[in-house]
Length: 131
Image (cartoon, rainbow, N blue to C red):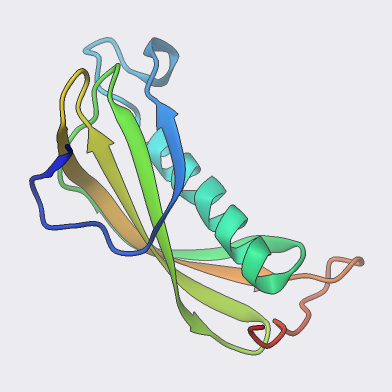
């Protein structure tokens, strides 16, 4: 059974991946940019499902890292569609680390990502109504 140290995640588990040595600096700390890239991937998955098509990242609103990740930790990304506009949507994203060989889960960071739906020509298109 997983033990959450910082409350419980908000949203749906969208992506899980293992932090490897190639994702770390010499001290074994995982690069923040790698964590952010995984968050962006998860947002792309969730937003494309909601938009029923192609999406791109338009903005990431304020991100700070509360805890470090280490080699061997499992990164768990949770997403929640917070707001849907005409062509864009805002997703709440949380990154949690399941510590290596442990049941402990700790929140690493969180942010709001703004995603825009695109048509086949790469122009913004309306996000369809939820079905």
